[in-house]
Length: 343
Image (cartoon, rainbow, N blue to C red; front, top):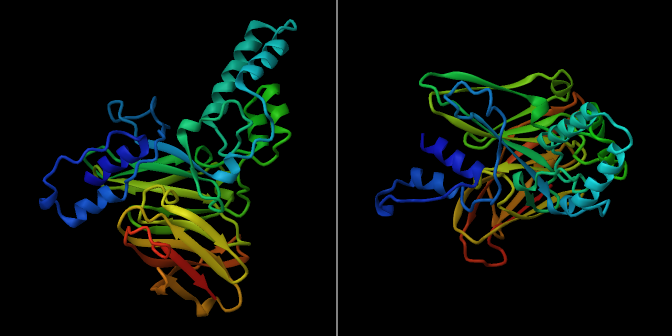
């Protein structure tokens, strides 16, 4: 229940208050608070607000994450006011009231299906999407909570959790004004044809899900104990380069990263060192020569690493998920929070 309460505070950006006698709080309890601090300042969207069976208590909350370089890439300098003018000019040409209402309804659908990083979309929900360091990509954060007094399986449509393409907006009946803007930005979200990395934050578990799951519109199912919560991170897989999968340092699995860079035989991660923390980061590396002789340094010293998964993405791209143990002293020193992986 403590973890569930922390999950809701983290996902909604609610008030973060510790009223306990801190000297009497166990390290395990204190670590829960540390892992949701600092708050991101954004608010999740409840996906089951009108369909929950828990006396109006939503069980599914969703956030978006997008790297700063993507969010800052504006392909069309058009304000929301100008869009209204465009829409008005289109609807004034003898369009029926029913047609106008349908277009307004499609706008709401576009808001729900917001594609992270698509700033030219006038209906983007920036209050539900926070920026992360360049190189981390874009992904979905979703929390699942079982508020019942018995174990239960929670399910949510996978298509509601991942980036939407321009074709998806067209299928939803997006207004022509949106489509004309989107034509200049053909890839608002990351391509998901190679499936998805799915990382469970509280349990530090990883699994790869094939793209066919999205095509088939299959649900994501998670079994939870009474009053248990889990925060899942769903990131489009890219088998051609290293990817930051997540960490157990911060619930966002990205807000804790200052920079993420890679080359042919190395990855460099710089974690924010404002606060003292200890935990692990998880990195995906495509199979390549010398990967079995990986050398890791943390804070400039030899580090500890282990392989926790060996996904075969798309049945043809081999790779490994590395877990690197880290410790941030919170001193602000240049080497504090630095992680280097070489092979």
